[in-house]
Amino acid sequence: MSAGQDNNALSMEAGIARAAELALERVAAARAAIGAVIFGQEHVVEQALVTLIAGGHGLLVGVPGLAKTKLVETLGTVLGLDARRVQFTPDLMPADILGSEIMEESDGGKRAFRFVHGPIFAQLLMADEINRASPRTQSALLQSMQEHHVTVAGERHDLPKPFHVLATQNPLEQEGTYPLPEAQLDRFLMQIDVLYPDRKAERRILIETTGETEAAAKAAMTADDLMATQRLVRRLPVGDSVVDAILNLVRAARPGDGDAAITKHISWGPGPRAAQSLMLASRARALVDGRLAPSLDDLRALAGPVLKHRMALTFAARAEGETVTGIIQRLADRLG
Image 1 (cartoon, rainbow, N blue to C red):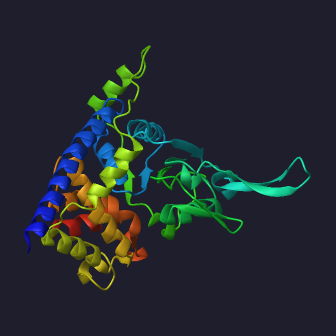
Image 2: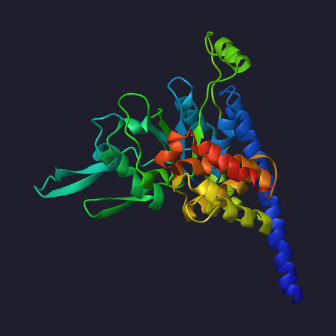
Image 3: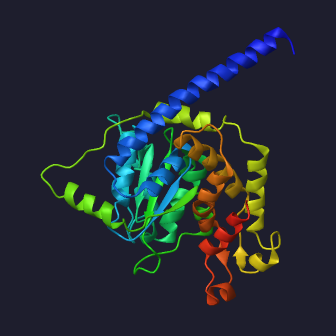
């Protein structure tokens, strides 16, 4: 290698190091700003932040009243994103999300169609109670979540950058809900389960949210800062051991590929997009945790959120009391 090439390599490494140091400071500030508003949901906050830093979409699942909507609003403020909210209801139509064309007549009497943008044209779209809308309306998000543009009346309309969907979902056992189709579930980088807070956190919530004043979220990053961090995530090194562990984990969750004692319970398993999601999410989690390279601990922590909405059990497995979470835990335990 020539001296010029050596200098270029050193300069590139120095640039990455500077970008990484700045990103670590920004992410730490963002996490602290979120923690000042959202209490007792550290794992949820971490997973939501990891989802956005990895450049993906997140599905927050939990019963009403657990601050899912407030978390999404807070993330929009803290990360400096143009955020919009859509309340999904059974009568919501695709045009209510994407937008529609209207006929306009000019002063000269000439008529032409003009596209009116829907709420999806935002940097952060909060799809509140997404599973209360019909499957037709749910599917309106498919193209936008994958390709970051929509097609209306044959015309392509690009979405803002960055573009993220954070959807909230009530448990399917509740009345008036529709299960999301598998193709749309696969578009979500992670499923984030929002559970009840512990007693200490709930006490803090009780005291700090029922007074005359309430803590307000403050911006810690800008949209450009977030995109710079997302680019850095894709440049972070990943060791061969972590790459092999990702492949082993995802392939072991597919019928016919893994241990027959486990895969006999699986009806369908995760595809290559799950491995891509694990790769990006593990890098992002390392960054959120103040590190510049992911480890097997990151994979163990992310296996459930990344895989559980991409798998289904057989009827016999459900009858025997098996759960997707339990199966994933057994697979993650084998990582060493």
